[in-house]
Length: 463
Image (cartoon, rainbow, N blue to C red):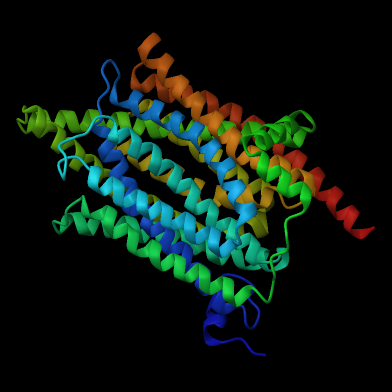
């Protein structure tokens, strides 16, 4: 059997075998549509939270505390989803979960400020919480589906190509939002527009399921796995205890926590600088009416983040498609996992010296794009030489609990920095520099443990 024309094209990115092209393209298109839909919604989140005032709190505090609440809620959502995963087959699970998300989108479309209602209390905060969970949930659901579709050998070869679909979908969604808003498309219409790619995504998921059902039939989950899924949050906490069982788990947990602490701090500070910049611009334009300021802030924030996410995802797409596999091939795991903390160190040092919007935006684009591409690849590669126990007990805890702890520490940073120490923006950036130095130290520790695990896995394979 020979490669098709499409499969020969895909060989530019990975080692693809005859007959694998159709499913790879369907998976590429699926995740492209999911991320496109998400980036129709994500800029609206920033615009809505920007006009969600809470007495006694700055806008940065509202955003930071909402992020932490979102993180805590997500833990319970993971447990609930685990229970459903035991009861339903994969196509039914993805279909029903996605339809539930679409129904939520329609609900928030009705609740948008200045649409059917003026501005219902706390709806902006609720929308912020929901979008954060939606973004994690739908993307994680897709990659779980992909892991179930592909065997380990095929997954190593084909998932990098599918991942390009994710970064290109995010870039396309951000670009379309910018173009639509420039053409006068109403911001409230973006929510409804996001449902279209999600409906098509359901159809593609079911198509892939039919194609691959014979190639890899889904086996009933082992009793131990079913029990673990039914335990939900308890299972995650049990897995979290593994950090004391090995230096590898300790280093992986510390790096994950610090990555999210640093990045969430950065997101909060970017939001603060955007709010300060918009307030200054409103004053320069003579906008003094409270309602007019709110409208100016919402539109300006949505437009800024639409453009910001566009450049993040364009750069992430270039890094993922051109550099990720090559850095991993020629530099190994150490090279690819060290890139993000080095960039973060340079970025936050620069932002501490020049905390102006143009500089902060440029540096955050570089950091987020690297995180979404090269560092995301490193996170997948990290667990390849680990035992099944480490993967199925430790990885869920690392990817959920310690990520959420990092977000929680970012909220504490804002609480202490604003309410107790009254820190200027520059000092928040300096604090992030110190966190990055600690992150680098644990990264070197993790590299050493990864090398030892890879060597042990190689020896076990030869026996």
